[in-house]
Image (cartoon, rainbow, N blue to C red):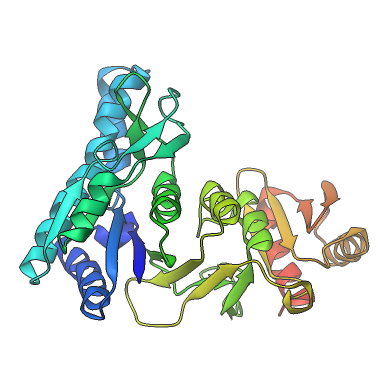
Length: 320
């Protein structure tokens, strides 16, 4: 089977983590799978590069900023290829343009227009693991372009679709997708699977486990997604289109710290649920500043100091 694996920045932050991630890929290759890896910039290196640029110019030219920021992922790709070779696995690194990723000309927030993965196919045919720098592609002018924050997830899904991969695995620092952020809500439960529509709603509402663009593209291209931990073995979570009878009434709750909002997602998220939660919050001394229901989600806005208590109450009341 051809598998696309994506490793985020926290999974590559130092050589120990890089070796662990390479070991995951090497084990999948030893099981007989063909592999394409997509890698993010290590740790906080993108923020460091951005800070460096702004020390020179408060508003750097978008083209030059893309040229700078893209080096973080290219560094990760080259180091990953070297690490895989140290583990006895032939590997070759590719920038986004070398991998055949073509984008529009919106530097800093480019959209992928097409993928022409011929070089990746030749690498796979030669028995190599192809390692692709995420977050980037080539603009119509031939310049390096970046896809915006979280763009490496989208790169991985786009490559999986173009190559006809059996699945796309996203490796990060969490065990999978939970009913809430387990770092904030200890009672949150791991979801073995989640409907792709619910995952998209959670991602759009502030959940950071998957980028909304990657979920949307996976739905459009019917790419099977899985979210797994690069730090500990486990089943992770699958993201797929579930039949309505298997889709749970409520899949999860997330927050948006910038908007001071709490959002619950699922097929039972409707006006009745919104009214019920509003009453419960206000009875608990948490005034609701705004509330709205859309198909598959309800959102309540509270004061900044009440955001975490509101998140806890909503999870306890209707999910836990």
